[in-house]
Structures are given as C-alpha cells and as structure tokens.
Image (cartoon, rainbow over all chains, first blue to last red; front, side, top):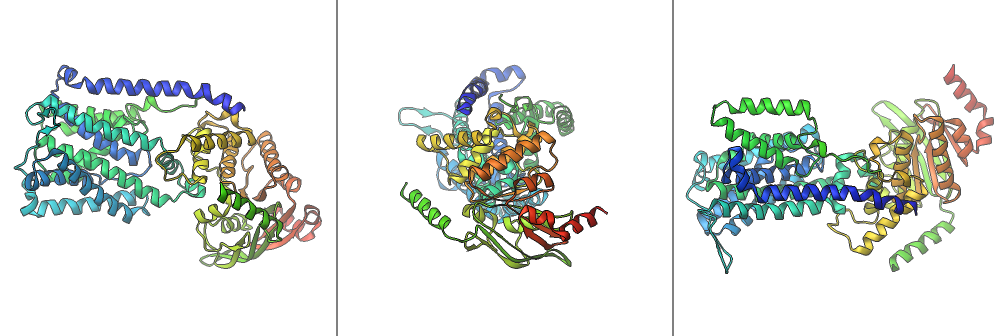
Length: 328
Length: 267
C-alpha cells in the first residue's frame, strides 16, 4: 500500500514540469516567424532550424534514447532528400507524395542496413554506419543521369497543397511553408514522444542504460536496436524530404559525412538526454552558421570553438539542466 | 486466463514430480589452455537454497555463468527443470524461468527504482514490443510493480534514481527486477559483495524471506561464510575448478578437505 501512497505525490511535480516544457516549446515554435527577425533571422531560417532539428532529434532517438551512435545518418536523411526530389522531378508534382517517397526510400535503406549491423557496438557500429553512408553518397555522386551527380538534382519545386477548401501556397509564401513544415514536425515529434513513453520505448532506455541487464531481463537486444535504427531512419528521411522541399534542390552533400557529423554536434550541443535538446542544438548551430558566415568564410572555426566551450562547461549539453533527478 | 490456469496446473504437476530444479552434469569450461571449471556436477532440488563457495580462483563465477547461460560449457550438460538448456541463449533461459543478479550490480542507473522494476515487469509480461497498453494491462503492470516493491521493502525509495542509491539498495532493486521475471530459479552472484554490515544483514534477510516464505529455489555464490552457513540448505565447495565437497552446512564445516583448502589458501 505504501508504494501507491508514495507514488501519487511524487509523480506529479515531474508531470507538471514536463507540461511546462512542452507548452513553452510549442509557443516558441508557433511564434517563430514573429520573433526570429529580432535575432537577425528570417522565416526560412526558422524552417531550416525545424528541418535540421527534426533530423537531429531523429538521430538522437538512437544516440540519446537507445544509447548507440550512428555517424552515418546523413545516408537516410539524404535518401529522403533524393526520394522526395526524384518524385517531384520525374513523376508528379505532389508534395505529400514526395515526402512519402522520401520516407519510404530512407526507411527501407535503414531497415536493410540496420539488420546487417545490430551486432556491432560502439566505435565499430559508428564506422559501419559511415561506410554504408559513403556507398549511398557515391551512388548519388556517380549516377549522373538520374541524380544530377555532383551538381545535384535541380528542376523541381515543391507543389502547393490543395486541401479542397483551401489552397496552401507553400511555394511563394514562406510563412505558410513554415507552418506546413511545423505541422509535419509536430506529427513526427509526437509519434517519437509516444514511442519513447511506450513499453517498447522503455526497452530502448533499458538497452541504453545497461545492455547486459536488458539481455538478462529477456529483451532481444539486437531486434530492438534494429527496430530503433529503422524508426530513426524513417524519421530522419521525413526530415530529408522536407529539406528537399525547403531548397527545391537535392544536393549530394546532404548524403555526406560532414552532415552526419553536424547532426551529432547538434545533438551533443543541445543535450542528448533531453527530448528537445537536439532541436535547440540545431537552432544554435543554424543561427550561428548563418550569422558568422555572413562575416567570414571561416565560420566553421567559430562554431567549433563554441562547441568546445559548450562541451567543457555544459557536458550534458545546453539543456542538460533539465536532466532528471530523483523524485522523492 | 485459460492458458494462465493451465500453466499453473502444469507447474503444480511438475512441482509434485521428483524432477530436480537444476542438474549440472560433468560441466567443463576451458578458456584456451586454462580449464576454469573441470567436470563439476550438481543437483539442486525444488525449493532448495544452494550456496557455491570456494577460495578465490576456484571457478565459482565461471560455473555460475555456465548455469545462467552467459557462455556455453566446453563439455557437459545443464538440465533445468527436466529440460536440456545447455545450448540455450540467455533470453530463452529467462523465459524458461531462470533469473540472475550480478556480482557488480547491473541496473538502469539513470532511471528510478519504479521504472527499473516497470521495465522488468513489462518485459516479463511479453509487452516488450508493444507501442501501448490497454488500461487493464497497465493496471496489472502497476499492481505487479507495487507488489514487488513491497516484497523487497524498497517502496519508500520508488521515486529515486537507482544510480543515486546506496549499494545495498541498488542490489535490492536488482533482485526486485529478477523477481519480476517470475523465476523458478533465482541465481545470485555474490549478493553481498562489497557491502557493509547493515546492508549485508538486510540482503540476507531478503534472501531468507524469499527462500523460506516464498519457496524460491536459489543458487548463490558467496564469500561471506557466516551468511552461507546461516542460509544454505546445501553447500557446494569448488577448488581449482573441481568439485571438492557437496553437503549440508554441518557436513561441510566438518569436512577436512574443505578446511585444508581454505587453510591452505590462507597460508
């Protein structure tokens, strides 16, 4: 009995805390086009933050919540970019179809590669993810006829969305496009949150916390890591599709190692143990890049410097202060 | 419910039979040229508490790992409740009813005691791949968690992160997780290793309750001789990888070979 009595008061402050964070995040995101000019940004910069933030959060589903590090997640992001771009370029001018195609292409690749690498751990896992990513990069790079090779895939634009009662002008109106991306972002983030709070999601936390204990509880660790990898690839491929729509362009660098590394940096910058950490990391990264690169071509030096400072003084990332503590 | 009932009936029928809980036949484990366990056999009856002791390097932990399926024996057979489990991987052994704790406590440090136990309960209930639970399933899980926290007397620390608890409480949380798997055989690897007087006392009390009041079959490896002679029904003594003696605590205390092995080790 005392357990029941204990738990009720102990659980409440945490839930209130969680709701507060959730409310704050959504107010900030919904009002982004209105406040971003004050920090020297513009609406499509906000859209870029959302897209890369979603990509980083998808990667963090693995790093922060399953405890395995992929250094090759640009592969699935890039496949989302190309999947979406190819549909719009060659098949049909439909934004939703493009997103679905990108999601399927990236998700399928993640499913297959995930199945091949779940026995690897740590640095070996990271190396294999890089190797597969390089394969996809070179396919996109060399297959000139289909992908445009080094120059990237051009000649498509995102298409307006006809809801029947209204036509969403996402082509010309940056605000409308921002809210369209926010809508997709909300769905993916919502699904991710639900998965993490499910029994399945808790097995991923268990694997992160202690793989040996997870195994001795009877969790099929390899299968769960495979599923987590697949889910993460599907999520990041959706972000990739949005990236193609944002730029109206599919660029081989979206499949390249540099992007994989940048995504890891965004996760660590914001805080890997916090759901929204990677989004903040992406925001800081994208805004700094935009701001510093307008002053110097050596922007990467300063971004690197800031990264080092954050890691030294906030080892758990900028949102590390939100980390969980004992309830009682 | 029906299958549940069937399982209970089956379990009772089996409990009435004379099949031992665990039978290890001539187990040998070699690591390259080093033979860590040499031709050891052991039989644990239902409801028995068996302690495995021996001087350092006697092969206790290796032997224990053979039983729990951490690695397979080089030669020999392991029969659990009448079934050959020699080549079964860990998850299958867990499903058959073996649960273990580790010499170095293995828990989920950044989660609360309640969450640690919740994960164990959900996995044991077969919910590991479920995206959601019905409200009655959730109520069942909550009830099982509360029951385990009560039985192990750690309910007052349910909301604490396990990594912030004292060593003894971490071990109790680990035992609660093992119990969540509803094991028929509980394997405890040095449950009081590195603990102080008070913590050892609490863990010993918990093990005794599980054995005497809840009728668990338990195999434990332990260094603390007072604890072993106080708790065990039978004691198996290993020395240099081989079986030295097997008997009741009073047999073992009177056994000159055992005294020699321990004294020889001390000298």
